[in-house]
Length: 508
Image 1 (cartoon, rainbow, N blue to C red):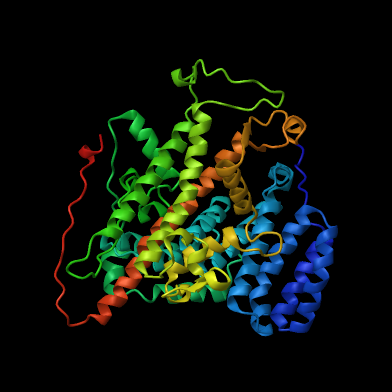
Image 2: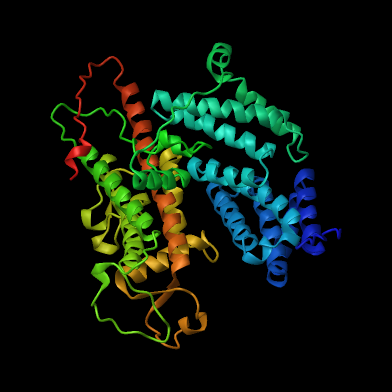
């Protein structure tokens, strides 16, 4: 039997530079580190993409220590780290590196990359996106201690910030199990210092809670649906972590988590206040649910043409664009999802009383201190401080991904999402099956923005995840602020005001 030969796609040059970066960082040689980083600006232009992935990862890994020593602001340091890790992911996830001959080297690299990227996201407050990165690392190597332990720490954080008591227990149970497994794992890349950190996280639990709950088997209710179509839909959504339910971020996809139970927390308001925030949140949730279902429906390939698509008398072209209800469902889902960012901004403007004029409210503008120029400029009444509220920080960093101009893009994927959204809303998009890419370069039509169906599906799924994260963080952000209000109102009489739930049977 012939032994398979594996190929290392990372050049010797990139490996040497990566080692030099690590050595300089460990030794604290900041001037040498700066020299290497300066050299890499040129080197990155003259190496293959696998080596670029390797080098961007190394830069992202050492940059925190470098920035601290050079007095670079924590926010600018995080921007650089996010940028480098994303560039690395973009390169190493290219199709050519999925070949079997590269797998041992590429998978070993990816698990480190996803874990470190997750750590940076967690420091930004983006706990939900960090979870998805740790899960990707564990999908490659289920016993990778660094991913196990850091996922456990994020679940521990989640258990503290989720205001649903029942949910808290679930998160702490998984956190405890993951942290314990990380401590005993034999993987050489799980450092002793990290294990000590994970042990310290476990020590925060009181012994009685450990003995009576955390060490026992977790009993998750089993649930099913008689309607096969509904079961398939809910199964798909829970597997893809698309429910507005914090438990859908756990590492198990149970149907009992397949519901959109997320709500606003208890809020302190004046006796004559109107329930405007609950109304806004209802609408945000409903539009997300609609977009999610539209997307799911577009995935269901029909065996015959929909009757609404018959006799529409469209013209065929040499670039072979795709038309039909199903394609419009993808576009509709995409546009609905993107539009929710500004609705979240509208909510924040009212809740924090920012004083932004209604016509100026956007997901980008809410982070400013004022708007307009010259005589038309005005300052906001209040300013959002994302450093004092981790969930607000998550929303802040999501917005920066879309709007900041950092090097070529803070997030290459979201830059493309913005480009497609602009064309869908204001210009002209042609969706193709990708069979004739040479005809999508302006030869047939130089006004259209071309996107393949596969790309549009991938971008829309990414939007579903980002918007879900934003909606959950909107609720958690309000929870943090309401806790502050409760502390300020300590000792004052607060009367409860129950709200009636909208019955499912009314949604006909």
